Image 1 (cartoon, rainbow, N blue to C red):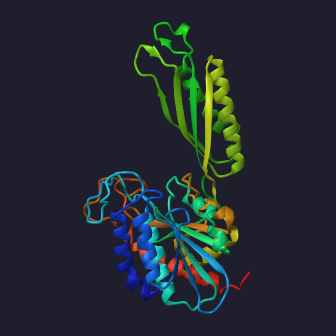
Image 2 (tube, rainbow, N blue to C red):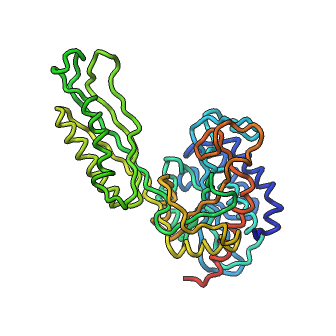
Image 3 (cartoon, rainbow, N blue to C red):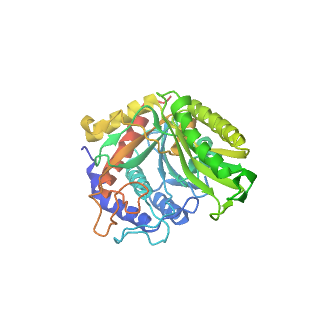
Length: 400
């Protein structure tokens, strides 16, 4: 790896920041302590700080000493998850029921490391915009920052994001052009029938029976309506009905998620889900109420920015350690909203297989959203170098 010595030397300091954030996790739109930490660090390095975008978001603007030029946005997420940590090492969560189980603590720390380095080396044209985003975990914090004028106030020419990826070799990069992560959508179906005595079912309209048929029929959308070459997932994850053994209930509830890589496939699935829910329920003398929520759009990487970022990654860790055709994932990311507004690229940085975890980690695997997860601090100098080189190379280009 071609890592800058100054960044290697500062890695232990950034590690302390990362572990500090990990020990004090905050949920979406509650990242007050984290935002204060980020803002104070940026200010101490002479970076202009803006607050209030997306409620608890923080933006740092660093202008180069060589005059005006391009403007590049670098984004990290700050929020934690509402789950109990199983780790017991020193920097484990001190906030019960809250945990940095997705590595946002590491993302924030690495971007802070890049901000510190670039503030000491301002020999570039243009501006770097450091975007510290709240509420990635289900709160669409990226969209909230955009709604509050992020790209009007900071009209970036391109925006870049990064996520650690467990199971991917430590320090290796993965990226692909086009769809990288799926849309995230939820549905709720309430089937209303006519309750009654379970021994006299002919006097009732059974929503449980109707619901069972709906659950089965929904999978036909994936196998019979969608083209086989179009990737999509429809998972029913909830089915609630009834309170006791001898009563047919009045209603049944079905809930789940839909993931797609294109809006066209999503449109098809939503249409068929509504039709099947209503028509199957009607066949059993019941009625269906359907709610379908489109939460995050697909994350679509832009070809030119993928090519540019790939060159930076290869320069940093070697071509053999960069997969430019990594498999897309059905996970979702609200950085997708930023890529709808600006050209850009989102990449995976390998977090390894969990061997990095200190004594006191939980017995579970080191997977995202697992209570035994911990970010791999060995990635800090790699991630910081990536952000630094990416910004420097991008701003070296002639203004648009």
